[in-house]
Length: 211
Image 1: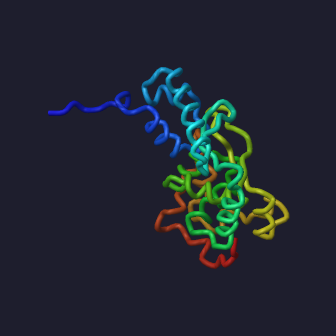
Image 2: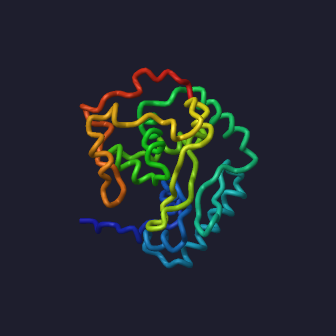
Image 3: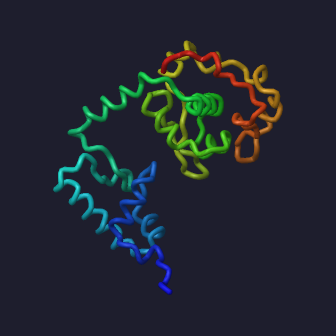
């Protein structure tokens, strides 16, 4: 019977690549070392070696140390290709999930990704990336308690929605039967309603705006 492998048994460089592929914010050497159960110096050396290897190989991405953490980025010389892809995506309509996520940000801003996910009951990381790419939401500092990045809607969002300001957003009460529960936030500040619940009315059914 073969012995069960642990994270410390994995090849360090491939393990680092696997982890860095799924992060949304720069990861520190200390955090990566803890997750992979390796010495910080070994992790730091491996990260720098990977960064050099990608440069020598002329890959379309690079591994950069930014604000104390490591993360994959598109290489600057391929910005035109990335811009073409992102702008092409802006011609498509937002999905129902994207519209609902955007609504949570609009009404709860500034709000962290984890709180948006808590409100919707599903992971919203991919949808949030789409909204960021479309220029509908932007970073708005960090949450003091957790350090999590906060997000808010942009002026472009107001422009596309035909609003002069956030004070022109419609009240939630006329659309949600559990409006009283929405106002009674939990201690973490996460509303207690679930937009995905079967009884929640579809407030986006008539939304034909291409954004």
